[in-house]
Length: 74
Image 1 (cartoon, rainbow, N blue to C red):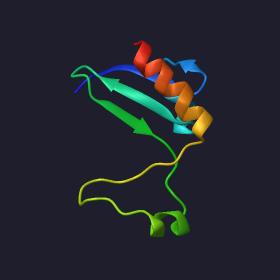
Image 2 (image 1 turned 45 degrees about the horizontal axis):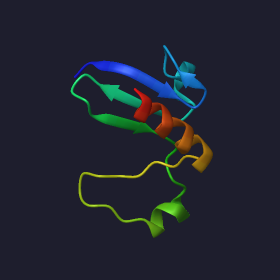
Image 3 (image 1 turned 180 degrees about the horizontal axis):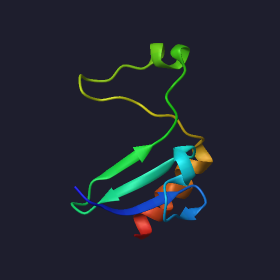
């Protein structure tokens, strides 16, 4: 897999938020999208269930909407 594009909260970014501290979407050369976000707090994680091999990340809704618009436009 090769990273094709990184889209972050503040627009297209060349590097992943200088240390990975902001939510982002990473688009791979095969078209898959990876989402970077915050690990849910233990109380949040207790309320979430995912199938084996899957997990959750957390980000503010406004950030998600910005990133989603950029992914759809790419």
